[in-house]
Amino acid sequence: EPEVTQTPSHQVTQMGQEVILRCVPISNHLYFYWYRQILGQKVEFLVSFYNNEISEKSEIFDDQFSVERPDGSNFTLKIRSTKLEDSAMYFCASSGLVSYNEQFFGPGTRLTVL
Amino acid sequence: SQQGEEDPQALSIQEGENATMNCSYKTSINNLQWYRQNSGRGLVHLILIRSNEREKHSGRLRVTLDTSKKSSSLLITASRAADTASYFCATDATGGFKTIFGAGTRLFVKA
Image 1 (cartoon, one colour):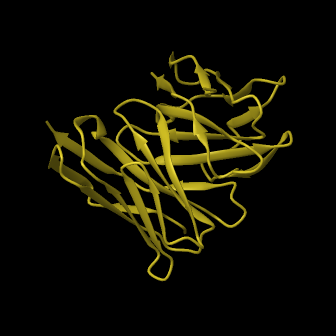
Image 2 (cartoon, rainbow over the protein chains, first blue to last red):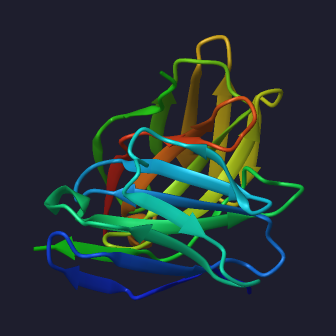
């Protein structure tokens, strides 16, 4: 069964460093998303992406964040200068054209900022 | 702002019992979804119910939606220890590119 994959599973970085979180969505999906979940809190929407551009983004998704689909398979989230409060699980999701609300989530990347 | 809120926050039941979780939201939606998350893991999509549907079944899951009350419920029948997880409802804004999750219900099923 096709699934969304994410790498790395755990990333530890120093405050101020740049990180890139990678996702491989399901191959025939056209909508891509990033969410984050701070430990013990709810899942928060960050950004959605379609047709090589951002469809919608939340207040969390400020200038420190960017997304890219550098090739036909990867979807990346870059945090330019990490802060302690960026420590969270980051989930990538994708959905197809017909049932675009039915999002399939990856296993997540745990980001720890020291 | 649109938001899904689940209650109870935590639920502990015996294996074989039914578990009911509720979700309320604030604004009009196109659909509502329920997800499960095992501790430290990703989200698993359980079921989607559209705004023009009132009830939907999938295996041991039964979801209801009352758009007049802006609420939904998830019923898990004949629960199993493996159902232990957090359950989230999620709603979309018109247009559907932004999904808002509630805080979740932590379900613990005792064997």
